[in-house]
Length: 239
Image (cartoon, rainbow, N blue to C red; front, side):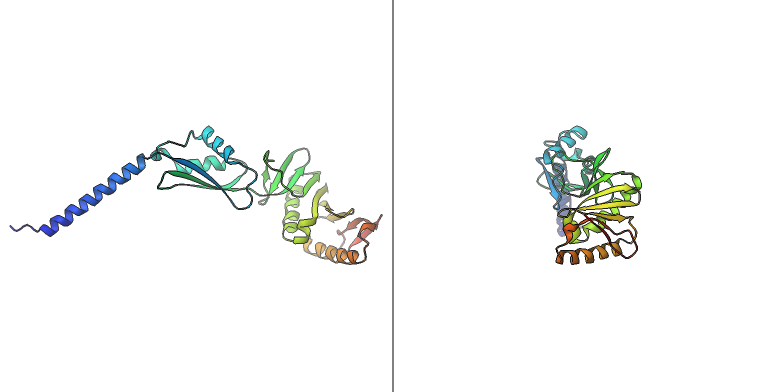
């Protein structure tokens, strides 16, 4: 019987390759975490610090550095990070050289409630606690804040944030009652009676036409109240 050396060589090469791969995989799993790296993504990275994330991980998961890679459960670490009220999303992965990388997206506040309770309203309409690291420059919401009025305030803030002029100039929303809201502007002394959140596009369109004309006439300082709650018109009260 003639031995086919080529077949034997090929088989031996396959076995050797598999063994080397298995050894490498075992060795890789036994490697320890050399470094924990935390990255805050986007431009909204002010409400949480790297130190606070590390503290959160140690308290809820234990030390990360020098821990064997095989003991690290990425999904659990992501859940721990996302349990923080300032975190919107987190993705965690391991690198070949032993780094545990956490990419974190923080929540974005769009309004600040100053009522019996104090908290932010984020860009998804959810409550967000105040941060001890940074105070957001967002419109202040005051008055009779309830669940319904908070929902309406979110609708108003969304509209404001989609308009460059309003985003730069509206500094406050006052809740008179549910369905009755006032706006305060940065540079103007008058109060804008908005009424409810119905027909916002028409109301602000009328307001912008009034504002442009009054600015040209240098008469903005003459008004105490600008009312938009009446159908398709702006009613002004002078000082």
